[in-house]
Amino acid sequence: MYLRSGLSIDEAGRICMRECRGRCCRGPQYLRLSSDEVPGFRRLAESLGVTLRMTQEPDGGGAVRFLDHPGEHCPMLDEATSACRIHSQRPARCREFPDRSRPGCAISGG
Ligand code: SF4
Ligand code: SF4
Image (cartoon, rainbow, N blue to C red):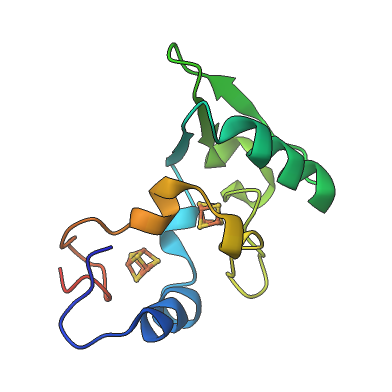
């Protein structure tokens, strides 16, 4: 994860949820899962009562298109708080992001 200088992970999380309202978990974007992550992600969705629409990638991984889900956000996002409901078990892509300074991103300094 690439954070701007001096920002802690906890502070970054608060900015993502409160100021940015989880922008990266919403809108015309995909979450890509490795083949190893797909079964666990399905189980988590089931335990939350979430209807998951996932397409299979040629390598056995999965792609979750946010626009295919209610609210047009990741089905794991809590709409009211913009918190990830599977935060402690979130996929690698979510743990790594942002992986570089990104324009318009308050926590990466872009
Ligand atoms: S754009 Fe940056 S601050 Fe906003 S949710 Fe994404 S990672 Fe967080
Ligand atoms: S799993 Fe969590 S962090 Fe990852 S896109 Fe969905 S809501 Fe965001």
